[in-house]
Image 1 (cartoon, rainbow, N blue to C red):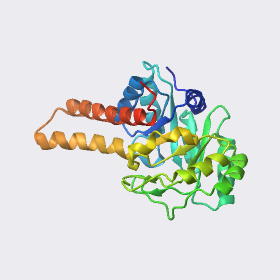
Image 2: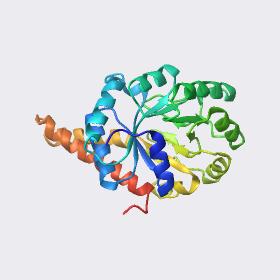
Image 3: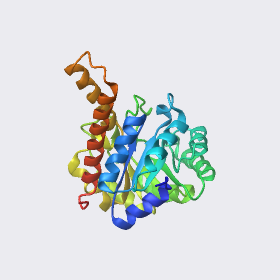
Image 4: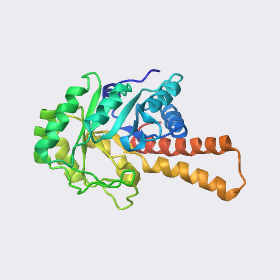
Length: 279
């Protein structure tokens, strides 16, 4: 199956009452693991990469890896720019044929966030999905932390969404990026944000949230749930365990295939936890 627009993933998830996992990739092993898991479960999925993670590959290599694997897949997948902090990143991802874009100007003052996000909307074709962020999510993404974190203000949501015309709204409601075992969703705040938003919501920082909270998210208008740190940890741990078991190990392909299997298991578990109704 060819890549689909993020709008197609959103619409199918909304119609089926599902939450799409959105999983960060940086390499072949992670890409294969994500799509293998999505095929097992049959839930539409986002694969994403942040500008901080294309230093080695560039956007084009990510596109090539994803589309080659998807040629034999039957599950809808969109390729998403995660945390595009600049309009240059948005333009680069679009040039590489990404099918979903995030503009993240959440650290800017409210009016400047709107202004930057509106330009990203103008750059992004209406056939592709645009995600914007209101409220600055805390924690660390690739060892990069915001200068300050702030929760999403429900009183600003309606104006922001209408001005930007985004298709998804990323929110800060207790979620944190990276390894954040104490992170918890504030469902009272999430409910207020959902009531004010005319578009589906996105939760970042999925690796640190407790499993018992994940199955509730679809009832609060969440359509996309981001996971990055858990996948990276699974791959690094898999390679580390192989070395610990045999410091003279030299079969890179065997170790890499074990890493793919580890990533697949993490992704499948997350998708099923988000969607308890999926068999």
